[in-house]
Image (cartoon, rainbow, N blue to C red):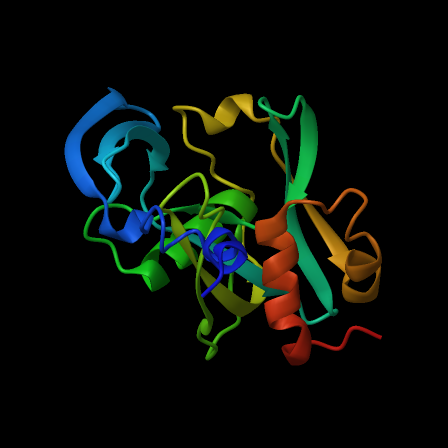
Length: 199
């Protein structure tokens, strides 16, 4: 192996972060988002600190109506200082089954439930922003019908200026990259694409 090969892989001369020794873990912020700093001794002896969000798993649902419309939630995201159009989603509570969490979030945020006789279809589990957090998201596809108005929690969602919007499937895919620009929502749409009629 040449010196250039060494630099290209970054593993021979300095070792891999996978082989680092964990020296210390400090919780910088416990709630509502858990922020962690870890001290790591790398294989070459250098000590670095590493920051990440230690976040519970989440769920996201791609809900479609009998009219071939997707159900979105429009809400204000303070860190972006703008409203975002997203699919219904939320955290999985401790000990909660992801399917139960998905059904709960769907109904709370949108007022929609599964069509009678239908179940959630799993689209898989994927990491969300692996460079910044250990969170992963369970994605589901659901055929839904409206039952009632959304019931938002009284803790924080009441400040999100949340509203429900149904968008024809073809239009929703055309809006990817404009007002549908969150990667979790975009990813969920791509995962569900083969199961819905886009045209």
